[in-house]
Structure formats: structure tokens, C-alpha cells
Image 1 (cartoon, each protein chain N blue to C red):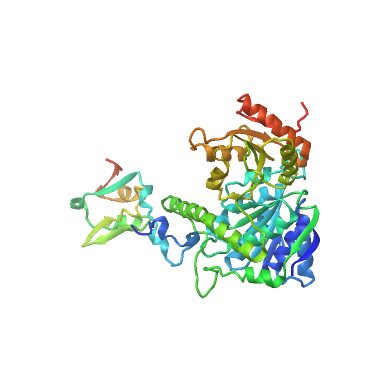
Image 2 (cartoon, rainbow over the protein chains, first blue to last red):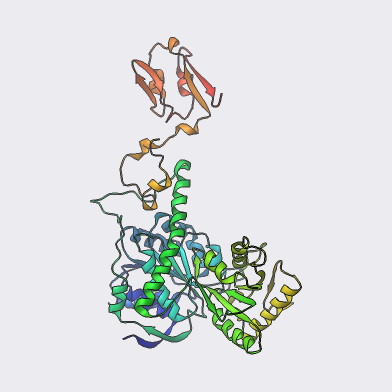
Length: 392
Length: 93
């Protein structure tokens, strides 16, 4: 029987990693990720988890160490946040191209300057194109569940890609919530030991991460792109297997009260839980609004998104990051996904940016944002983006 | 095409499972000028064979020839030939 326990989001991740019975952990502590590795270090020291815990001197080394361990066929884990993810940046592109099933959890944090340890999605957007499967959890239960799903999908012989779970710094990482923890046996059955097909082995030598001159680099990138595109179906299968075993259902695109809506709010991460309350309040007052959450960020679920948004009058994209000089990066991708829909089925899209550097967006502010979104749609102010809660 | 695989033929993660593949690496496409040999002037002294930094001069049926799969077009063979039997000609001409 699953146990219902109070756990911090970070510790929910540590529990998932322990139950996944990882072999190697390499991580460097950084706010707001610290509690995840702190707990894992304790588990290893106490003998509750039989794993190598490598204390590295930087995030660049953390990712390098887990890449090496994964190449030996080990099940690995690392986690970081904000500046740490940026220091890891160079190495992030290696396991995706080398097709090593590394799993990482990122406690999303703003980037300097000014120095800010609180949450937003600046760090995620800066590593958007690193070739990993990327999922967003919005509460502690999802952080636990999606960490297990990350291992399950990453290690599939028909996937073999690294997978990343994003949890909002503080709003998920440091909040204590009830979490249903399954029996360890059940997790072990769901996640049998990984069988990487080409582990480094002196009896079966291979060369990994070789030099790839111009005549082969394009072919390697094509193979990598096909692999991540094909992983979409495998993510769906993984979510289904997860539901069959644990009873909770995930989708690449999840919806809340979208029936008959003429305006949909679209976003990623934990603020969606606050937004639900705003949707409820507006619905009570007769506004036909609904909520769409991207659970899967890469591979980008463009087709499923089109199916959800097709024919809706307007979409209001809210995001916690800016691509300076261009606007909201999530909004740009949503617009691109809708571009080829025929006139009449293509929603108008307005962009809002907020929740930067840990700034809260409360229920009233979401309501105000949706009201402003309606104004923008009816007056055709569709270009650019507006800040939420900005002092002029 | 030695070593020039399609994307479908690549091993997962472009892992190389056989040793000795450096020989498959075409360096001939770095060339901007190619050596053209006037065999009637060649006295078979072997200077080109000795000086070629790539080791891509080969003996074929008793005559020296350049393996253009590897030749980078450095022109050392033309410079060292005592008989001026090797001329560097711009690629594409």
C-alpha cells in the first residue's frame, strides 16, 4: 500500500532517486536544489542507498562525472539550479548526442545579475536546445512521479536519451506537501536495472564521443533529432505504464476546465496551481476561461497542443522567462505551432511575462491578467508582451 | 565511400565499434589545389614519395601516383620534384 507522507518537494525527488536504486550520484549544492542532494548524501552515508556519491568541485564536473558513469552502464543522477545549470551548460549537450540516459532534476532559478536565488524559468530557457527530454512538475507528487518516469523513458532501448525534470525553485522544492509514496517493490518492478547496450567494457571495446568532422556531423545530428522526435510516442507509453502501476495520469499537454472556453491560459510549472483558482473564480462569474499546462517541454508536443488550442478564440501565454530582444520564448513556440492552422481555427495569442526572480503571482493577479488579455484580444494589441505586476 | 555512412547506418550515439577507422577519414576534400603529374618527365627518384607528409603517394604498376582521397594539396611534392613533373592545379579547373 502506498503511504501518504508529508514531504518537501526536494525530498520527494530524493525518495524517487533512492527507490530508483541509482548507482552513481554526482552533484554540487546550490540554492534551491541543495535539499535534494543533501538528503541523498545522507541516504548514501546511512547505507539506505547503495550508490557512489561523488562530491565534485563544480556543476561542470557533476555532469561530466555522470556522463562517464552512464557510459559504463550505471544508473545516474544529478541535480542543479540557475547558475549551476549554466556552468553545466557545455556538458549538457554531450549525453544527448552520445545517447546516454542521464537523469537530472532542476530546481528552476533566476539567473544573475542581479544575484537572485529565487525561482523562474530563465535557466530552463537558456538550455532549451540541449537535446534532453524535458518535463515540468508543478507539485511534490509530480516531482516524485516524473522523476520515476524520467528514468523509465530515458533508459528504454528505443529512446536512450537524457531526461530532465523541472521543479520550480522554492515553490516546489521547499514546500512541504502530502505525497503518496509507493512500496519500493512496486518501483523496482516499474524500473528494473538499466541495460545500456554499449557499456564501456574492456572485453567489448568501443569508442564513444569521437571526433565528428564535417562529413559525418550532419548525419549524427539527423539521427539525434529523429531519436528525440521518436521519443514522443515513448513518453506517451511511459505515462500510460505509470498510470497502470501507480494510478496517476500524465499527458504532454494537460487541461483544466477547457470545455467551451473562448480564452485559454497556457503555462508551465507550479504557478498553474494558483492559476486554477483564478480559472475557478472567473468561471463562477460566467467567464469561459480554461487552463492548459505543458507537462512535456521537449520533445515539444506541437500536434497535441494544436489539437487542444484549435478553434479557441484566444490564448494567453504566461511565462517566467524573457528572451531579451524577442519576448516570451514559450509564447514564440506556441505561436509557431499554431501558424499553419487555417484562418478561423487559429487562435489569437497574447503574451505575458511574470513571476521573475521568485515574484509571486497571486490569484487576483491571474484574474487581472486574463481580463487584460481579453482587452488586448478585442483591441488587437497582439504584438509584444506585457509584464505582470510591474511597478511603472 | 569509405566511412561516409548515412544517418541510418550510424550506431546509437555515433559510437564506433570497430578499430582503425582513421584510415576512412577523407582529408582529400580539404584541398584547394591538386597535384597533376607528367609521367613522361618522372625519373622515379622517389622524392615525392619520401616528402609527402600524408604518405599518400602510392606505387601503382611501377609508377608513382597520388591518392586523392587523402591528398590535402599542400604542394610539397611539386616543390621537391627535381624535374618539375608535378604541377599544382586549382580544383574545379
